[in-house]
Length: 205
Image (cartoon, rainbow, N blue to C red; front, side):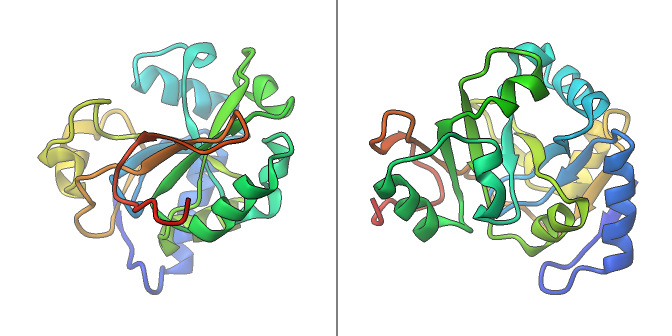
């Protein structure tokens, strides 16, 4: 189904309906401040396995990022970081960035692997952050687009629904998405390395 939401004032009844689907292991297409993303509840193994299948991967090999509401609980999923890295994250987020950080011991348990790194996102998008807040834990997400290809269907929620209506439970329609992905910054060494330049500028580094 398609659920229409507005970024400036998301309908809380619709948000609750989306959260119910996520809690049952559903897959939802979310708006962000970059491209639309597939996502599921990080704490639902059924949802994680479905998301991995949707991306053509095994869960143990999947490379999902986490969308958090704010920085308050990222220490549950990451190891302690250098002060300069924390300052950069605090300055950049919410925003169109993915920070690759050293994963805590909790992450391999969730994904059933030996994952040592995890991508953290806090998009500047009120719809998705309100869903995460009500859900009570992060979302595991993967961009709708293929890794090296962003085409029309990835920016138009109606086109995303037409292509993936049998793969997902809900597509959130919140207007056209961006056609440029997030900027990816690798912080696992203690320094900040630019892996991919996307929407976000890097003046804060």
